[in-house]
Length: 503
Image 1 (cartoon, rainbow, N blue to C red):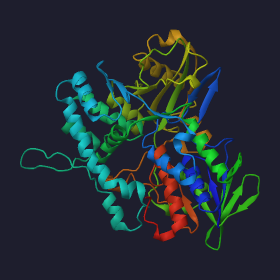
Image 2: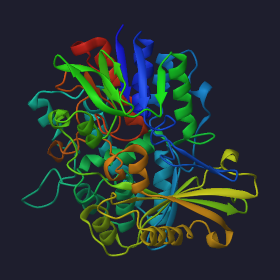
Image 3: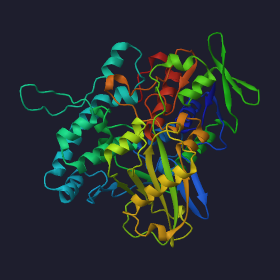
Image 4: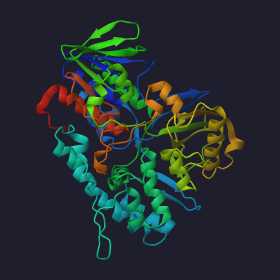
């Protein structure tokens, strides 16, 4: 039985802690915040409640497996989990709107044909079918197995497995370089292009440079569905915290780790801000690259695959509205920005021209989100440049950006301003302050292709006894991927070098 110190109490960290505890280890989690859960925060005020992080769960099988492996109660016995239908609605720049049913390939085809024109649904379906080849080729090596250390294996993951349509003419090229190329060649209609690219943008990926394998993102959503946790997504973090406590994981909340203790060339514990130390046989760090480098100078450089700069962040506006949520309102609607070039330049290139962003409008039909049925809680989110590239502490700039998001949302929530009681805003600067992630950046899931640029550091490190979990480690960001990182770390600790991946 080993003593294991876990730095951070996000979903990846707690997933690792629960699995390690059930394997018989003594696990202590050190979290500088007052509550566990990482990005799954909850804002409450005047009877309204809002999720401050992810609004939906994809690939719920990851958490079903976690709860199955760590206790008697299943995931559904611990939280109310339901599919949202439609999975999403979209309002395109030309005013076209479409509602896409949840986990129904035929339904999506019909809806796109009706909204965009005959043949649109089939073109989309053919692209999603090709994306299945990406899923089949990368599911094990990218999501269920430890990231291989040998150069040949990493080089293989740097190749894009998307089976692109061959072009016409003498010089036919089999593999397009980017998601943008796929969209232009295979979808053609600007509304379908916006639909595809919005999946990448939501994860902070630039469609102009993201590999074609990013088509797997809409494939996963369309195939496995979109799910909401009743009472808010925060309830998932609370359930995992309770599972950890039931497995006798010790939580030391409000205690910041300031240094990784090394002894005899291996990780041997952590030092806290109050000057005390906690000895450990193994350490699991679920922190950003910058925080890891601060805790253990030089270790981050040796992990490999770290992001060279902070990824894009999330800008959220929380709206408390008078008046009931209209019956039949979609849980999630994406209002696409009218100027793709300006938006991508601002998010990824440092462009400064004002633009109206692509805005996701979340309107959960959840009594726990509102004081009564005569009110409604609405959340607006947009992917934006990280703090530092934009000064997200500039109150005037923040207010102006929130106003532009509200302008977009009025396409979905008529008379929004007349219904508004109050609003609160969260920017990447707030995320940075709360989590320590540089620039408030939100890491994207790993993807094959792009020469391996979108891989993350392996869960093992060159410092014996130190493991990495969470969104900044393999297999990257997102709720499902965080859960997978915990499973991989636990497997590596329990089975060692013989571990070949989750089953």
